[in-house]
Structure formats: C-alpha cells, structure tokens
Image (cartoon, rainbow, N blue to C red; front, side, top):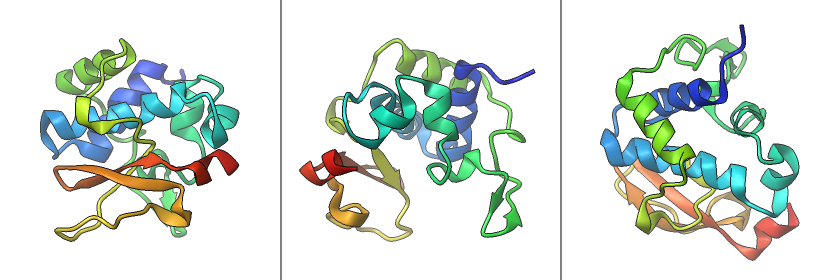
Length: 146
C-alpha cells in the first residue's frame, strides 16, 4: 500500500531534519510545501501541486532515495517511520503554516560548516536564513528559467 502524502511528508521531516529540533523540522516541511505551492519554474511543472511528486522528484531529497552514489541508502523514508512530532509538523505545514523568517525558500542543505554560501547552485537561490545545521534559499530570477 503506497504511503499517503501526509505520511511521506512526516517521514521526510524525520529523515531530513529529525535532529534539528522543532524549528528545523518545520523549516524543512515549509520548503516542501513552498515547492508544492510555487506557481512558476521547475517545481510548478514537476510537482503540479502534489506533495508526492515534489518529494519523489529524482535528485531532490537524499532521504527519498533508496540508493545514493550507487550504494544502498539505509536512511530513507521507506525505512524510517514517522513519530508523533513528525506527523504534527507535517499537518501544521499542510494546513498552511510557515516559519516567518523562511520566506519562499525552495531549497535547503547542510554545509557541514559554520557558514552558508550566499547562493544556491546555478544561482537559482539566494541565502535567506539558517535554521540549525541547514541553510535555506529563496528563489532568484534565475529560478524562473528552470
């Protein structure tokens, strides 16, 4: 039986940001929902308003992939069930709630350093804030070309 959109989001939150505290998990959930709701660019075309299509789009979330670099990825949404907090945050995000300082962030990544680079690859994103270990990026005009 396929996972529901709510369960996919809850599992992704746990896998991508389970150790980042409530705000870190909410920020990741916001990125997914921003992608679902963006009216332009790649995510509008690929996602077409679907949580499932956004989460399962190839190459977007390491946790949505069973293999990475040709090797099995044991930390993925198929192996990691969601706990109560992940379900709550997924419901919070689907209901339209957002973290105020995140803007319209469409990307996040962990730089494994104390600083965040100013631009996301290909200059499609511009740094907006850091939450825990993740840097978040709002779309630039270059994103419209994707």
